[in-house]
Amino acid sequence: MPKVKPHRTSPSLDMTPMVDLAFLLVTFFMLTTQFRPDEAVVVDPPSSTSDLQAPDSDILTLTIDNKKRVFFGYDKAPVKEAAIKAVGAKYGVTFTPAQIKQFSLLPNFGVPITQLASYLDKDTEDRKALNKSLPGIPYDSLNNQMIDWVLEARKANAAQFKKPTFLVIRGDGNADVQTVQKVIKELQEKDINRFNLLTSLEMKPSFVGE
Amino acid sequence: MAEIQQKGDSGKGGKKRAKKASTKIDMTPMVDLAFLLLTFFMLTTTFAKPNVMQLTMPVKEKNPNPEEQTKIKASQAVTVILAPDDKVFYYFGLNEPTDKSVPVPEIKVTDFSANGIRKVLLDRKKQQPEPIILIEPYAYEGKEAKYKNMVDILDEMNITDQKKYALIDISKKDVDLIKKQNLL
Image (cartoon, rainbow over all chains, first blue to last red; front, side):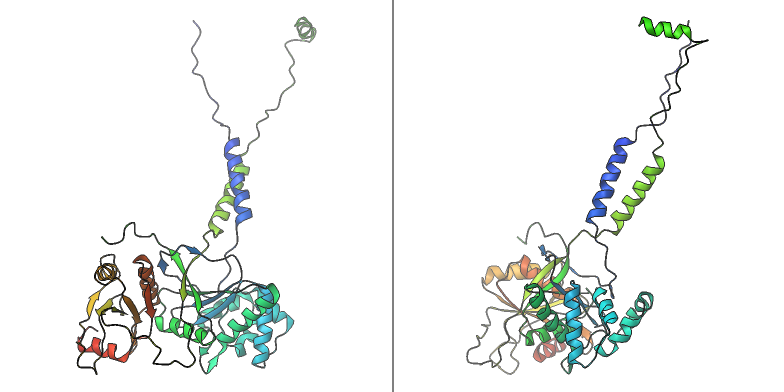
């Protein structure tokens, strides 16, 4: 009688489908990824049930953090280059081409125009360390640089791309309303009446009241 | 068949088979790398485009004419005050301390939960189909409402489908009224 050997299956299994899938996903993520820009300030936007999406481009972001600071950002480098030249000219500050280039690479910033040149000269690490203690862009009626940035950026975008600018207010949930209202009021003075408050999505209540 | 046999016989000893290398290669390092990259891209990617809430403010009139401005009827007015610490104060009607014929409104306190301000607004809508809601974020003596509260109340306006609402600064008389009723 022959010995009955247990049928030994090989422990190595066919990994090909798994590898296929893994590479498919790698390719997908590699192609779709957009790296999170290195923002000067981190804010936690409040949630709302609004499911309106922000457009892909031409976004001007005014970030308001919980220390009453305002940061300015624009998503297009050429617009930022034009804006820094125009605002610099208005305040009598000139920037070197290297500083302008550096400025166009920053996602947002929050320093008065007089300190902007020295801020741009610093390297990335120093700037990051400095971000916590930045004063933000002045926005009170006596020294309203924020409105100049907004107007110049809008003008530059209209001239270069013939498109309207989408103004987004990205406020921290714990920012005080007064600061936000003040920013809105200053913009209203210049006939900017349409705002978009950036929020994170929250589920709509399935039924209302009743 | 026969040929093969012949061939086999002609060789010395047993069959001399060409040693076939296995076609299977060890894919483990490659898979490791693939998953490492996959994890990296999954974690760094930002998918969600942010949502926005539209806020359209009225055009500022350069020379406001008091004659042309519409007066809010007391029966329509609902004042919602965003108080510090996520509280919501509200009262119906108008607050006119100088006018003795207008009864002093009583401020009620509620919150942002589903049974809070939302229920109040919905109940009010049943009694008065066209309410006008005045939203006043509280800001006085260092005590302030948060931006989150403002977004929340604007969101409630969307949820309860209000047609007329306005975001305005808190008035001195409302601050006095809150003080008088010892709410803060």
